[in-house]
Image 1 (spheres, rainbow, N blue to C red):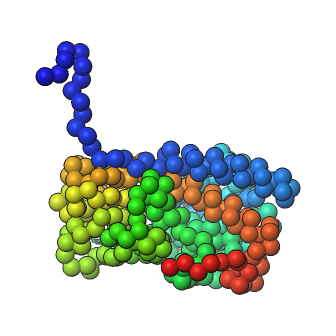
Image 2: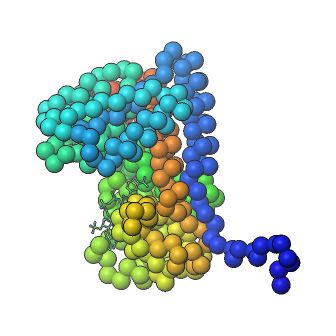
Length: 314
Ligand code: NDP
């Protein structure tokens, strides 16, 4: 019986892998790097964000990136183009940022308006400034196991596991989702960490069986409640990347109520990968700035591959 005045102990839930405290550590390290960079090179690098139109859902996220820059002392640069800016104007804006030595990294709002094909950006964006890993050169470097720029969300999803001390090597991992921005790169990063990786998608037959086999599960499907407790292996570690709005609340792809009694740890939504993504992007910006300032990349020539010091990784 509980003594009078004492609350009954809460049943022990899974360990929550929270992105906020990790992001704070990452930001503190970046802030120190910014100071060292300024001392070494006499300027502070800028991160440029190109936004086309005002209504894209990603606009809020992009403004958060700019706020994040300010908190660590990185110069933020916002280029806002009208909704009806054509492809030529968008390409021109990106080319101008490529040519600006003060700008170390460029992010272009995705999705672009339907009038502007993705190629408009890809054809122009310098891979050495592509800090969110959208350029095929960076995607190829990741696939081959070389050092390029990673899509920040996928990087954050795996980083939250690593920084929480979750063993990945030799473990069975399932990634639900195969997009170029999250699922595929997250799977490749898990492979780099020596996990044994299965990628699931909308045509996967018997998703529950695949997921139940996994010790590590990363879910990036954009389907609220897709993964329930019954589908998960007892003791599994889960990273929920999904962002969905349900009844006015932000929820992930994992049904948190049924998953909680089953899993050993979960990066929840909200509060897991989201807060870390932004901080990870700042680390990419500083790496781009160092590469450029120290002459490790040849800007504009697309010859990032031979000039980067790279080790081959799995
Ligand atoms: P996409 O829509 O591009 O990809 C979704 C993937 O999930 C596809 O590969 C799709 O399969 C798969 N999928 C959809 N339904 C099912 C299903 N029923 N069973 C199995 N697989 C399914 O989304 P993104 O990758 O861009 O984003 C995924 C989620 O992550 C979204 O909720 C998004 O909002 C969130 N997100 C979160 C970020 C963060 O910072 N936390 C940043 C970016 C995204 P198929 O390929 O067969 O269609």
